[in-house]
Length: 308
Image 1 (cartoon, helix red, strand yellow):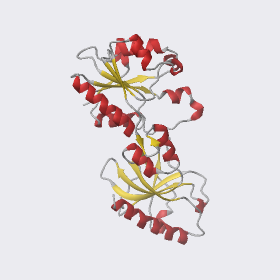
Image 2: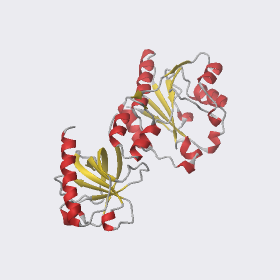
Image 3: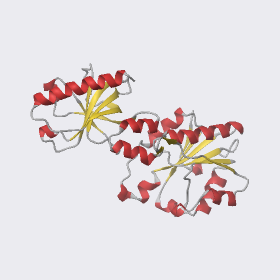
Image 4: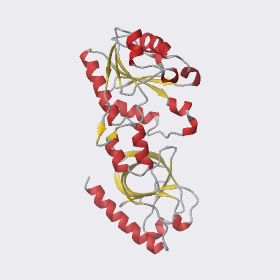
């Protein structure tokens, strides 16, 4: 079971010095998993714990708020994913503007050497740290010549380097199939089922309206999805994301129709996995035309989901 430490000052001073990696690990995608697998291998060689040092919130969120970079996953989901990968230790360092002013040299001496007692570092191809991202692996080698460093090359799939930024863009574009390939799993978000306009019931397509605080939302359209309610079993369905132009909607909504499901789930937690984008959102001339299209969407989604 993963041990979580609230900041490097709380990190254990007992036992074998760890093998450490440092990064944001937003999404814990396939590129991250490649690095983390190397971390575990090197830790096992030395009979040492594998240790992930990460920040909360992400430095980019705090230092570049105008960019409004959405997160692939909140910190609690990142913890869960790292636990699934059997990482031994996780340090969640509180990131602040004063912390951001520390030099790369201070970070090496105070964090890597003193607090973490790292015997080895495993880092990514684009690893930088310290004020203005001035620190590199050469900074560590110069100040801590006895600490081994292994740099892991970028993972590429086709023409894409697997990165958090690439995955964000795929999701924002609605290309959830490609996002799934880069992530190694479907992109998902979580929210709470709230009362909606209940128009779907009148067309034979009752929907759950989901409110979420996730900031990374796929583009408008209809998707084949898998969902689970209150962390129960996964079920197939379709989801419409958008403004409901047929009804002159004024608010972006996430609506989910679960196949062969009739339970009252208002107030329940729901997780939605986006499997495939079926079509873009558009205005229909009537409810009858919309219903016919939804029937075709559902049939297509059933075929897609059955083939998985």
